[in-house]
Image (cartoon, rainbow, N blue to C red; front, top):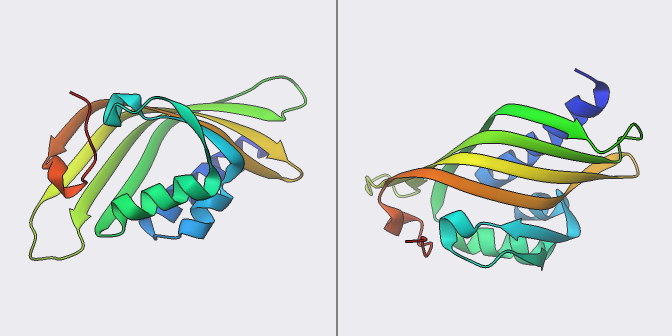
Length: 150
């Protein structure tokens, strides 16, 4: 694995940890100023560009009451050209959600694939596109509060 591939994968690890640690500033910092998001397979929202701060604020509102675990696997990294300024990553994912209140036994888990596009900004990588394709949800979606696609 090249140094560039390792750096891209490490950046996506930081992105996932920011969700799970409720590090909303860190989450926003993983993104370009404007990020294209396509969560239409989960929420039914129209794909669009949002600011990094708006992205983080939406996730904070949706997830602050939850304990989450975001896991990526089977990462495939490719670069646009030999200069390695743009990377595309495809991966499988599992997102596990539980109520922060241990007396609430509900859970809600999602499984599927992500496609990320990252750009190199100086020495750092930033995510500029996120496409999530949910294959399966398990559990009680009311725990999450998302308007799930029918």
